[in-house]
Image 1 (cartoon, rainbow, N blue to C red):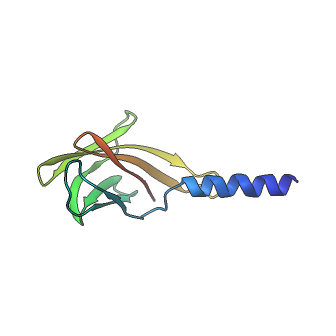
Image 2: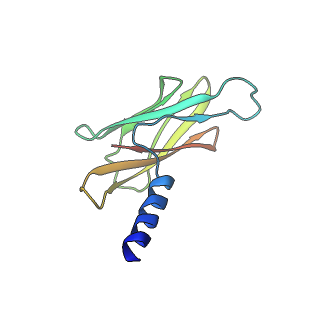
Length: 115
């Protein structure tokens, strides 16, 4: 029974997590046009975060700040873009990941998990 419970719990957690490096789509408020793919990259050596909207850099900066969440801002086609991020270490391999809530026009547009 215990192995089954652990399997169900692990499956549920995996379903809630975003896949590192997977783009998400955002439909701008009041816009009937195409969805905007939102993606990001994190360079752990330089501690640099980049947020992409439609393949263009919309926000870029370093996460060295001591404050949490760490914030990187920019814009895309006149729309303000902000990423609020936290760094954490995975339990099962000790890999450092960055989880970012991405906002466009102050509306939460994506949740990215980057490695």
